[in-house]
Image (cartoon, rainbow, N blue to C red; front, top):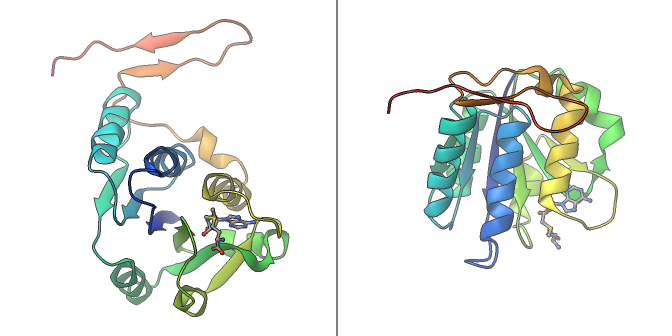
Length: 177
Ligand code: SAM
């Protein structure tokens, strides 16, 4: 399954940290790429540094228009999953979504345009209370991959954590840049 994420319409500057965390969760929970609109270019550098240290080739792409991404992905047979507290219950659709081939997950920052609800193949609520795109995304990614995302290996990492009961155990691979 290929999973990509698009975050639409952040509140300029104020949301930089949240946007970075949406990207970090996407990467750590098995997505391949995130598309973003209206963001600080430093976020791309931050994720680039994370890839260099912790491995993998998670991609960040800045886009002018979120609608173009959704339409292009629909043409490529991706299913569009829009996270919204108004959507249907996650427990009712997680199985079906988990069996789809390719997914584009849409999260908002503030009020999202009405049109997204119609463009989406699934409007999914992680509970019916307002909370955060970071938590909604993490829970959806975990439910549809059933925890398997944490077995994924991030290739070419300079640092690799060996999980331990106490303390820290980090393997460091020396490489020449
Ligand atoms: N009032 C906004 C609205 O009506 O869209 C909510 C904005 S919320 C801070 C930002 C994003 O978090 C939403 O666009 C949605 O993607 C996600 N989100 C928040 N609560 C959610 C929930 N209960 N279920 C699914 N997604 C949620």
